[in-house]
Each structure stands twice: as C-alpha cells, then as structure tokens.
Figure 1 (spheres, rainbow, N blue to C red):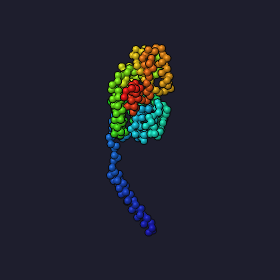
Figure 2 (tube, rainbow, N blue to C red; figure 1 turned 120 degrees about the vertical axis):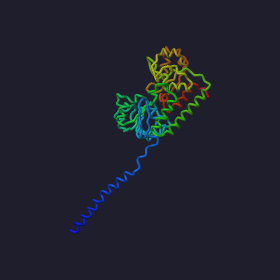
Figure 3 (cartoon, helix red, strand yellow; figure 1 turned 90 degrees about the vertical axis):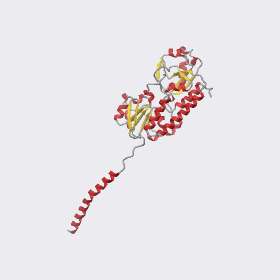
Figure 4 (cartoon, rainbow, N blue to C red; figure 1 turned 135 degrees about the horizontal axis):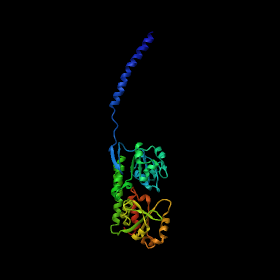
Length: 328
C-alpha cells in the first residue's frame, strides 16, 4: 500500500511539471531571433515583362543555353547550379573546371519532366526558346510551380542591344543571387577589354560587313537589334544589314549583292562547318562580284560569342583582329 501511494505521488508530481515544461518551451521559441534575411532582399525585378520578387537568392538554378551557363559561372555561382543544358560549343577555358562540377541535364533542351526532376528554384534561359510553352517550360507555368525565371534580355529587346544592356543583364543577375560586387567586377572587366579594342582601332576606317549565319535559298544574317551588330561596330566594321530591326533575319541574296560587303563574318556552330559555308558563298555565281567573296575576305565568330554574355569583350577583340589585323 505504501508503495502504491508513493507511486501515485510521483505520477502526480510529473503531471504537474508537464505544463511548466510546455510553457518553458514556448517561451524559448518566442524568444528565438527571427531568421535573418539575406542582404539586399527582398529584391524585385521586371525582366522581359515578367515582374518577380526574390525573398532570398536562388539555391538550385538551372541554366539553359551557353551564355546563360557561362554568366552564372562567371559570377562564381557553380555551387548554386542544379543543372545546365544546351551548349553550342565548349565553355570558355576559364570556366571549364567549374562547369565540370555542374550536372548536364540534356544535350539540347531538357523535357519538362527532366527539368522538374532537377528540383530547381530558378531557371535562367538564354533564348526565348528555352521557355517553350508547347514543351511545358513556359515562364508562367514554371512560376506556378514555384520556380522563378529569367530570360536573357537580348531575346526581348525592343531597341538595339549594346554595352548598356550587357551592364543591365549582369547587374540584375548578380543582384538576384545577392552578389552585386561580383557583377560590378565582371562589368568592369568587360568594359576594360572593350575600351582597349576601341583604342586600338581609333584610326581605322570601318569595313562593310555581312554576317552569314546559314541559309541556301536566302541568307540568315545578323540585323541591327542584337549584340552581334554591336560587336561588328566595336571591331571596326559596319553591318550592312544594321537597318533590319531584328537580332536575326532572312534577307535575299540580291540584297547581299546590292550592299557590297567587304568582309563576310561566318557564325560557327552546328553541323555545317565554316569551310562548307565558305564554299557555299564562293561557288555561288551570283556572288562572284561581291567584294568580300571576290577577295576571299572571311572572318569567323563562334555563335556563342555573338550573344549577350561574358564573351562580348573577348569577341570584339577577336573580331577586330580579323577585320583589322594591322591595327596596333
């Protein structure tokens, strides 16, 4: 009987202590400091007509297209990348080691299932085709799934794209990831390289340039809206189709003949080689009197260098060396 009364007293004491313990836990929770927000957040940006608020930097980003991948790597964000897809050629050597640590989701665009399987919280597309609605990758649909998005602004520009747009692209992307100082340094590096090219070409006369991307019945070329047009200007050229208000456009071969380009810049990518493109131009009798074709004046630029990304300064330098090899 004594043991029963002792046990009862022990149970009663324990029961009385439970509410106190619960109250103590609640007080501890109430006194806990709230989670500290990352500096610079929330951050709201409007990109290609889509307004997005980031409460914190993305943690699992997927980059679609070469220039999107390289921009993230250039900002030192490999640890924040959950995947990459659709490169036109090898990444720049400076980023190869970091790129090798990023999962490649697909050779071209990943299916919606593969993309979602990477569990991204942010998708950065280089071209508007990255957000193809028919393939289930449209920006609105991804947003509904809780995935923030960004499209490289060259794909939605309503005016000629140049260095100002490159600064905006890098600045906004760096702010999105909470690394504005890295963005500022990257911009400074690009502008330094471009400034050196301008200084080198200060006394040169611009050459008339035609960009040959592809095409048989017509020529697919660079118009005046894209960064390709700016690269030609920076490199000491004048795009003969700068008046075309598109980044890329089809033009007739008759128009090419009429505009008498002095140099053809061939975009290098895909299954058709640079040599095959040269031969297509050289063997076309309609082009035999075009100065660039008659004099076999060709320059080459990788397509991945002719888009709004980290290659602008390098591309301007490389193209200037081909257009004006004697400039020092």
